[in-house]
Length: 75
Figure 1: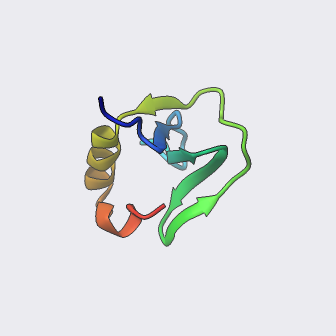
Figure 2 (figure 1 turned 90 degrees about the horizontal axis):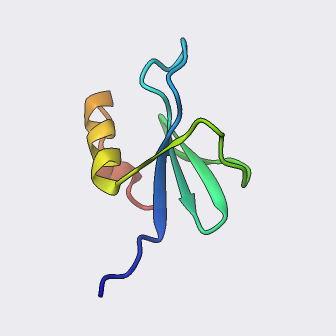
């Protein structure tokens, strides 16, 4: 049996400012958004339009956006 992921990833809907959406992560009850300098803490409420992503999809998103996944792995 595998352990469930301790971090759950989400992607917000695209907007004019963020055509590919924003990458979010939830660890326990805390929500974070990926910013250029790392994970920025948000509140506990998840945006209604945020879609769940697997870890692999989150890594792929970072690659498409030109972000180094390793720099953001330690949430």
